[in-house]
Image (cartoon, helix red, strand yellow):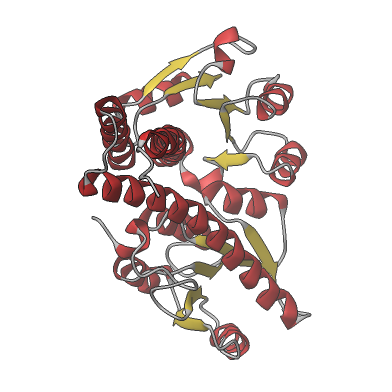
Length: 323
């Protein structure tokens, strides 16, 4: 399903609509009322309320939201599961979890599901809620600016080719090839190599979804040559390995089992390592969508760099008209 919030049309905040959109989900009417009153004071925020995940999911399937704010404990589907499903439906959306107490398990589970922050209730300082929503909107806007720059390069290349600029044939061919490669990268996004440390199950799940994945031992030389490395936290060396790889080329995903040391996982969050599959997010089954998004981003970035280089060469090859 090709929806506006994924194609870039109708973006909130900077173009398309004037307001950024926030969905707040909580089964306590008083919490919904507080959130609505606080956030609706902001003239550029449009707030939608829901009292359960079951009420929120149809909204998420039909409308674009910039930020989801959800309570952890909801009747029926819980907040962590809602975040995971919402991020599947709208990968570029930011998610914040409201919790009555910040236990290690709840924070880790929320981040593994795709949350970027959490909010404690009762709200001792209402400015914190507003500030965290604003910070989430800025993170999303930053990502959207990068994507818009990529689209602008592609648009410029297409316009130059269509105009038939008087450039040499090799420059035309090179630009056409890179433009096709860019469009293919955006459309498919599955190209890339994935290495897994410590989980045969993860390899099997990824292969079943069409990914080029294989299990390798810790510190194998090929770890530096792949696009994504998945480190299962049951491996005794996972933390040292993840910290080393974070300074290298691959993206690192931690397959975080409930048996892992909670202090280590919380530290991984502070280091901005991505967690997948903690608690109720069903372990390795949560990997395919996360890996797809990482490979899509990496593939588009590589194709964008090549397209920008071909575009620069094309411009330089156009003869300068005499004054």
